[in-house]
Image (cartoon, rainbow over all chains, first blue to last red; front, side, top):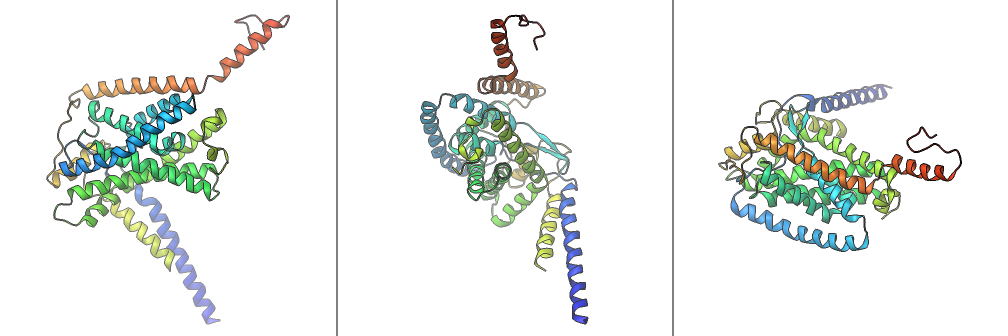
Length: 258
Length: 111
């Protein structure tokens, strides 16, 4: 009898602790503070790192260009689709969105949605064009940091979004959940990669882990809400296309397993 | 006890995050202000862009141009991929209507 009482008491304390912790976790991002964003500005990365990230991005761009040629020959509406997706990625990735939970502005990437529609290879190409235009004319990013920015937003964002989408569909999750995960995870992966690039280049004599964790944690207040927003954006766009012109979507978006 | 610990860790991370070490002015574009500050602290200050449009209202102007160009490109391809549904139906109705006696004339109220 006594044991039962104490067990019940312990369980009730655990439940209360859990509820308080969950509430605090949900409210914590509402504590205003500045945060970090994605595009790395001109001249920030030392030359060897800038060259390394640039070289790492080149094979992905080449693969994407080859993909464009072959798929355009197969499908007549493919080029307009790439044009639309490219314009959308350009606009989305240079549009600062105020994030009240952080008190700053940041921007989504749009690469998760793009990867679902045109594939990750071509998403790298459209992201590269968008980032080059932004670096040249909009003082957004830089030419020396272009490779790092392409790798973070184009490559890591696109392949993470596409991977999340494919895995979610393969395990039988409904398409809205898969689309949401693609948008959310592509956004978060982009910022994680940016933190990694900055930490590797700027750690100096300090600890890589400390710098990387600091950068990653600093992204949280902005990127939790922005990632969720990007997830919903992805779901909305896929819903619209399913309703208006489902043949533009891969079979997986229509309920198939591919 | 595992769940409260996990949640406590999450709370700690979020609280630390909300007290980010770098301060920026409210609603600042964090792309420039924050990363540049971190880079400065690490001895790698950002340089001006090759074509420096960040001067006075020039940046507003180029952003407006970029918005117009991007919006035009998006709209152009959007119309190619998703032709307006109503217009095609309307045209179809006119064609069908002209073949029927007593159909509403072009520009009329129709159905």
